[in-house]
Amino acid sequence: MDNKRLENELSIAAREFQERFEAFEKAAQRLMVIMECMHQERRKEFKALSNDTQRLHEFLVQTMDDSGEIVEKCFGVRCVADREKIEE
Image (cartoon, rainbow, N blue to C red):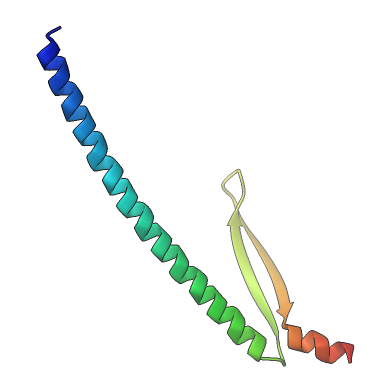
């Protein structure tokens, strides 16, 4: 094969790799921003739950097992203030 042609192909491949890597970096940064926003929302929700001392909060969680079936689990969370009140 011609060395010049191989150098051109290598240059093209390197440029394509660089473009895809930069796109990946941008997508990863967007993903991190989205995840941080979701985490902040969760913190707000849990903070709101801890301010309500009279109720047991129930959550329904849907997960997918290895076989692809959706499994639902329900659990209750009593806020810390309620537990302390009960212990007194």
